[in-house]
Image 1 (cartoon, one colour):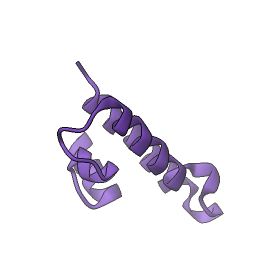
Image 2 (cartoon, rainbow, N blue to C red):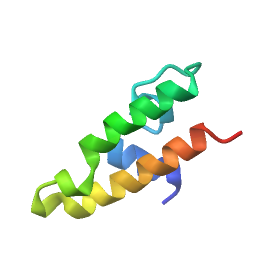
Image 3 (spheres, helix red, strand yellow):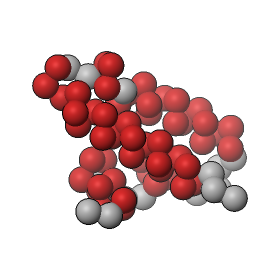
Length: 72
């Protein structure tokens, strides 16, 4: 699957900003804050035993999502 398809499966949308709960014209500080908040929600260490693999995938996708948004 492609990155956007993986996002859609994991988060229910392929909109990078919607995943983080952001507006499209937000600043870098807002992106960092939203990332930290979302990362705590999907972090594999906080997931129940049976959901660690899915949480790991979500956490990795979230990192890619932020990297894509903040690319110069």
